[in-house]
Length: 322
Image 1 (cartoon, rainbow, N blue to C red):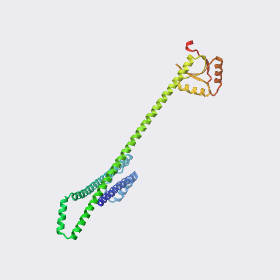
Image 2: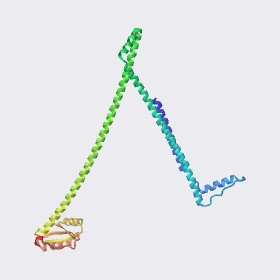
Image 3: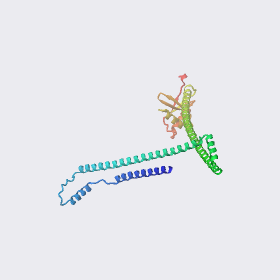
């Protein structure tokens, strides 16, 4: 039975491959077929006219304009495409029929195999369910009517049969047990894989959340630091006892102010920022007297690498003294 199913399956595969090959050949022939040109159409007409010399034939006039030739070629192309489409549809129908036949054959073979297995199982169960008293009665009758040698032979055959049936049943039980263990192992593996995937997804989500929290905390810390520096500078300018500052620039934005501040600090200057309504004021100092502040101004304006020619000294008066 198993060999018959294999033969049917192999035959179905061969038929399926042949159908696919036929469809591929038809498609390739369609692609390779050249489209007829105006010259070839004219030559065919002349050949037909030469072969019919001496006969009374009503010849149709050939097309003389390009548009008519294009229309004829388009009609021929559409006719070829329609024929190819019909061939491909027939091939597809044939393949579908073959696949359906193979599926029916496979189902029938599976049903026959299941019936054979069920029949064998019922036979084993029927032999296992014989009442012991009937077996004993049969043995007593056999002892009364059979010679000792025949009795021994029958007993040996019966014992061997019982042993063979027991071995077959044990083998079947072992196969069922192995199949059950395999199914349980597969289920366990799938559960472990699913749990591992969930754990990895959770770890990734937690890591993303942690990174976002760290970025938010860092941005907040930077903002707090800038605010603290600005407050410190404002407090120094408004409430300190130093009166002279060198203003080097008035930046339009905070980013420009930070860039200029970094350049001055790289030169060793003590830089202070003071936000105003017109921009961010960048100053160096404070100095205790105007001469010290003016010396710093000259040094800055003479430094070509800084390119700050418009620095000037301002007198800073705290708010409580204004």
